[in-house]
Image (tube, rainbow, N blue to C red; front, side, top):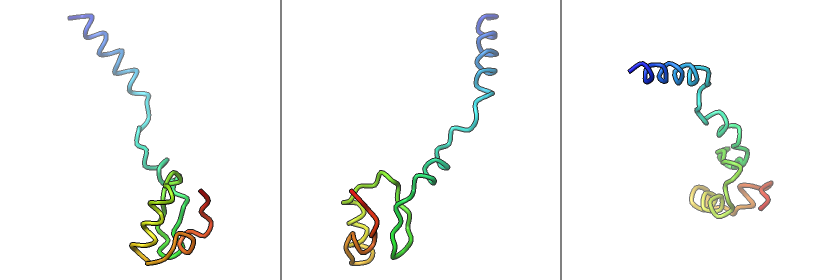
Length: 72
């Protein structure tokens, strides 16, 4: 009984000083590929096929027209 209570107290103190673990701010900061037609932001790690699909489906344009500064 007492050992378990001590362990719970120790773990509660250990976890109390940790900040929020949400990744939304980090993910928003990583969105730096922007469609020049609709200004939609994409993550830095987005690959060419996904961007090409966006350009074709949304705007009927090419990858180069929507994302002129995108390099593979």
